[in-house]
Image 1: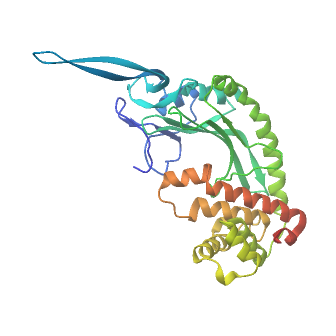
Image 2 (image 1 turned 90 degrees about the vertical axis):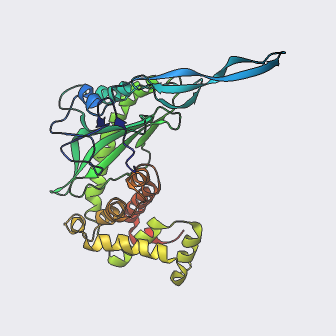
Image 3 (image 1 turned 90 degrees about the horizontal axis):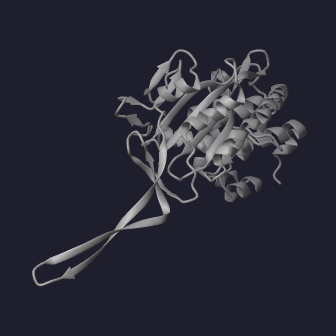
Length: 355
């Protein structure tokens, strides 16, 4: 199953919830009102705990006597390795080292609750568990939103994911999403942090408690993003400039860069040219790109790349799409585009020159 959403056999439901809108996989619980953190834990079937338990192996010795084999066995403890186990299902989730600290699911929600302690604060949008419950994720909407122009709104979300199998850090990211087309925008401003990673060590829980200070960064980042996007919505970009910006944003390797720099466009791969054409076509024809704040503007150029990965690009499955947008190639290209647009806003088409 590409979605990899955990199925809870005890509750006979998938471990996922979404507010109002059905998820792409069509699974889990769709609820009409925003839940409290306690309710969200239950709707997403995340109300379980994880324990670290010792790992064992066995040794044996065979002694012969005149009548039969006598097999001697004994238990050997693995001192530096432990299994992480769900206490409700008794399913092992992974193998971790002795310094690994479990951060319980409820602690992840406590992080969100610590940001805004009133009913008008954090709004839990989605949450769920993957695999056997070894990875969980939560998205929550912040109270206000970014405005670009008079009609184009970008809501602010916080995204948290963590694992119980030793494969990754606790990751908290700031993600703005355009309401009209649901594009996930992963942008970073210079000298700001839009992603926090916390390792599962002895201080993990304390660091997570302190991570609520991220809200100050988030609010400041949102104020700056609103100003940036509004400024970009007034910066005009011609079609040739747009195509060159897309080419620079989508460069996959140094070889392609050198060919573009040398003007050897006939030597560019068909895969690269097709990708650039797809992004450009999205900018020219998609209805969300035809409003005043995007059509022919630098803001529209930025949204063309983010919209391509969200709505056009073919991925192997939805899980691959999710990973690309949140952690991988799509995120990298979006950040490259953001930087190119920031340079273009300052220097015009000189920003599109090869360095």
